[in-house]
Image (tube, rainbow, N blue to C red):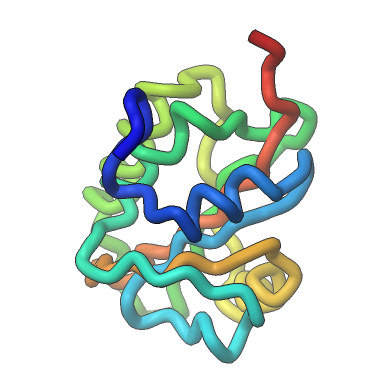
Length: 144
């Protein structure tokens, strides 16, 4: 345990967050996501929801202020409906830590998978909400 760092963050996840550079992306994936098929660096966070992890990660992680879309979620497949409470939960966590963040953008399913392949890492969570995946683009860490 460390003072000021959430116990939800495993040593492996802290290591990845620290090693990421500005512009690198990390996927917080729902339990249905094909993480192992999309990326060679997969961190397990089973049992944790994406909203919980956002609240644990965002105090330590600056979102990229130099792009229009530092946060992205998967767009639903035609015919599927989104549960708006999922994005609302994620947005509430983002606003607690980085309220000036632009709106969350939606990315077509297969384009989302391609971004996941290029991401620094994929974190497999226990999130069960359909379309509960989110991509965060790391910004420049402020100097204390």
